Image (tube, rainbow, N blue to C red; front, side):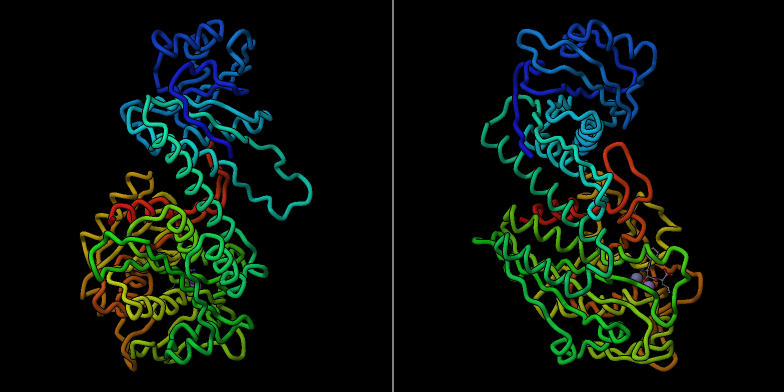
Amino acid sequence: MESQALTENFSEANVDALAVVIFKGEKPSSGVLKDLDKLAGGHIAAVLKSEEFKGETGETALLRIMPSGKVKAGRILLVGAGDKAEYRLCDVAVASGTATRYLRKCNVKSFALLPRFDGDAAAIAQNAVQGSVTSQFELDKYKTVDKTDKAVTKIVVFVESSKAADLKKGLIRGQVIGDSMNFTRDLANEPPNILTPTEMANRAQKMAKETGIKCEILDEAKMTKLGMGSLMSVSHGSEQPAKLIVLRYTPAKSTGKKGELLALVGKGITFDTGGISIKPAEGMDAMKYDMSGGATVIGTMRAIALLKPSVPVIGIVAAVENMPDGKASRPSDVVTASNGKTVEILNTDAEGRLVLADAVAYAETQGATQIIDMATLTGAVIVALGDQNTGIMGNDQELVDQIRDCGMENGEGFWQLPLSKEYSKQIKSDIADIKNIGPRGKAGTIMGAVFIQEFIDKAKWAHLDIAGTAWHDTARAHQAKGPTAVAVRTLISFVERSQ
Ligand code: BES
Ligand code: MN
Ligand code: ZN
């Protein structure tokens, strides 16, 4: 999308519409709001007075104006942003997305946004563009009729003056991050007959080629040779061969601590039937998004490849399909993982932790000193936190805190759950080292985490359970329903902070 940052004469921008952020309880009595109200013949004041529009987040009101003289736009859109005291940088993306989705419906092609946020102008520009780009993602890829054929193709962001080069950088960053989020969402939305583990590997490979990073795909023979019996046990019931996708970003000049390597590891179950412990038919279709953690890793690596931070990052995705079949694992099977630990599989539907076990262990063999894994791992996290907070757990409080901070900055919630030896004891098996489930109905999300922890050796590690946050069942003013690309922005911030 075309984007531009301007510092003067908002109302004279060469666009179809002017979008302005309005806070709760505001009156257009001074400054730019007063000027706009004049342009609108007093209708902004009227709309606010009548409470047709209250300034709540997600609210919009469209006013028509007559273009004349230097004013080219024919519309003013009021965009609610809630309480002024709570308005943050990441809310600029929400306001921009809300404006874009509304104006797109009206067949508007270009608009200027007055974000009304006091802060770093380049960062404001970034958030405005990202919000606009992600707001236009739709689930209609496979529709042949009723496709969204309208698009907003140009955004002009108004900011306080700043260096032109910085503003340009902000705009480009917004586009890169927005595109990478949409790339992640497209992967998560793909039907499982199309996005098989092989196809997921192909898409990662194509992305790596386009962005200039390394991509290596480990096939089943290689994984078997490496002793990845835990991951491979999940794949046995599927006709589709498993793939371990390994993406490597190496900066031209590294500024990070010597010997430090961050690994992002994702669960890439392209479809989860539950295996022999089969899931009920109702709602099973949702399990196409069980590769969202993997999609997040690939999308984040795309952004990293293009933003070029000065620290190395490796991305690992265990792409596997979980199916019931003559060769599928049985409840009570015992398998050996690549770190030598034996696992009693008591429920073949707790497959995410089985594939992650070998994937995180592999990350350490590749030199990872910090590991962040992400997975749609448990239904229990949805019960606990719903769709607004990702469950976070880990063995290093500083790492957990850093991720939480980065989340806060980006409007993404992470809520920590505790880990302890007592919890770890609950996955001890009678006949093997560990079992893949804990006691029924107890701390399901923590049980998933303590299982993965068994495969972490020395690395600092955090686990993100995104089962509740990776998919939204309802649309919002700034975002279509469906895949959310949760954690992509947070992880980009995290990587950039460690420079
Ligand atoms: N992919 C599911 C978790 C899930 C459930 C994600 C609902 C999104 C929505 C995972 O593989 C799974 O089946 N987990 C089981 C674990 C149980 C068998 C210990 C669960 O949560 O029921
Ligand atoms: Mn499962
Ligand atoms: Zn699963």
